[in-house]
Amino acid sequence: MNKAELINAIAEEAGLSKIDAKKALDAVVKSISDALVSGDKVSLIGFGTFSVAERAERAGINPATKAAITIAAKKVAKFKAGAELSASIN
Image 1 (cartoon, rainbow, N blue to C red):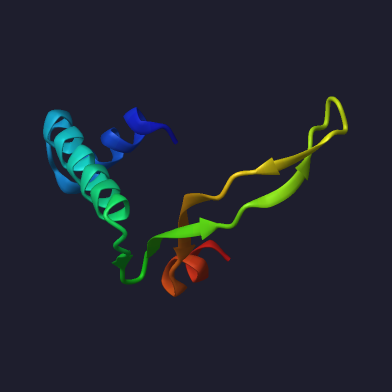
Image 2: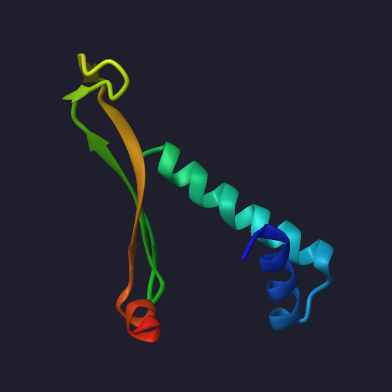
């Protein structure tokens, strides 16, 4: 499902116009992104939790040259599915 298909599904499920559904989806995505940028965690009970994790600097290998390289530390976004979502998938 891509963004346009998600907007259509939201509009149909909530009885909104596609324009309102797009605004709602954009607002949710922006709010989650802003929370993660500020270091917060977003928990949606029954759905899952979005959080930020830090990856330490580590050694790696350049696959083209086989030379050893250092991969810099960075922060990454993570999602952990909630119990209800996990149960509905299985």
